[in-house]
Length: 516
Image 1 (cartoon, one colour):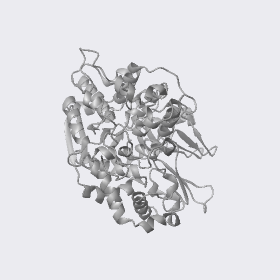
Image 2 (tube, one colour):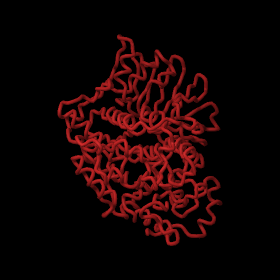
Image 3 (tube, rainbow, N blue to C red):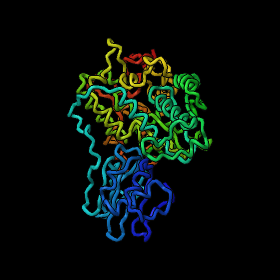
């Protein structure tokens, strides 16, 4: 994002920004010919377009971003966040300072200043001129009550995701892919590997879509690097090896011990700024992996967040009563990604100075995938349709004998593993055991006396809430946290682990809470 803050020539407009604008070169062409760009930052274009478009500038941005713009001449302040909330932004108020509004990319910056703090809503922009926060992101699928009826177009899904990956390869620094061996990360890795090889072979430039993508990182580090983490013997490690070998990536595999994970919990809560159980479970190994990635000099990684929300990929979606209810739930999950998986992907990596980019949350790809008839997203085992069937089918090229498949069948059709499960089943088991040792039955029974808002219901949740309170003691900090909870009204268990769902191949025995 360049040296901060960014300013215009006379320094009357000041921009502080976190993120990447993928279409910045195309946007520069919208500026008058005499526009003076002071830096090579992809974000500087926001300053110059603001002069001509005002608040509408945000509608033209394709990327991940949170930014604050101050126009000193007009005493105007704008604050905006990307459509899905891939990057973080918080807004706060202090009752002793009426009329004052605070913004920060981290909760901890507002912790001692504000007595009310919220996560700034994705897809919105605040304008001090009107005092209003309005939604600029207006996709056709936003209303979850409107059920789409478009038939699935496998080619369009495939090509839209390929383009989403391609534009995110815009990079001046060495990059890699997070590879768990699951469907989502493996597809991203497969596409990135193909695009990288096309450039190396001189077949096609990245900017063939007119996106003016920077190819310098590919030139300097031509082989795609992939990264995985897990406990010794973890399902994800084995699957990631298969995918990496097939894709011919330079693969880096790291193992961690349960104790290393437990020792990192306090730091993870500090950086993630949440006490949500499933987020902390999954963020801990991702946080440990990001430290290894940073040590290698890699500053950007592609990651597979978003596919489960878009395509109903979590195992609890097997319990969806109807296609319409499945669709409504997917819309809700996508809207809430900034509280969970986006927060995890962004903060677990940025804690070590690594940037995570998420192609599945591309605006154009969402427009395609969220408008598919939800009946096509239903998991129907009797018809051989598992979770995320249409995404798998879109990349199943086995019917073309001349084309090498994107992935081997063992990966393309592998059952969903949530990251916190796939890194090793004993990881979650150990977290529960540790929580049981730390939190007494009496303490849990009196949890509501300690926390009347969002009272923890399990010892593990109690433990994380306690750690959170050590870093963020003000009650205002809890308002920015939303817990990830499966649908109890669908008959789903409260535990967010995929293994808590009866359709999992290694489901918990409900009576013993151990893997069957």
